[in-house]
Image (cartoon, rainbow, N blue to C red):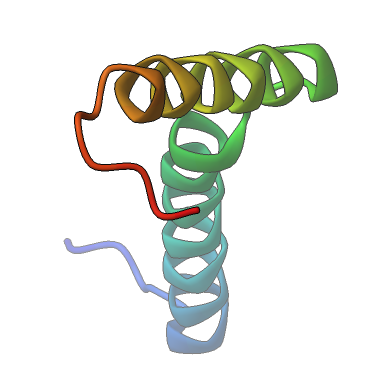
Length: 60
């Protein structure tokens, strides 16, 4: 004999699993702390300033 499967429960479980998978992907992609964001922003500013300071033609 085969087991009877409730399709409503199956669909809900599938949707929950999909949401959990999406949440895990988002945590990896956007899961930086505030301090990490500030550090990377300050590094970008420092690098930009260093490049601008070494330019021969300054726009002033």
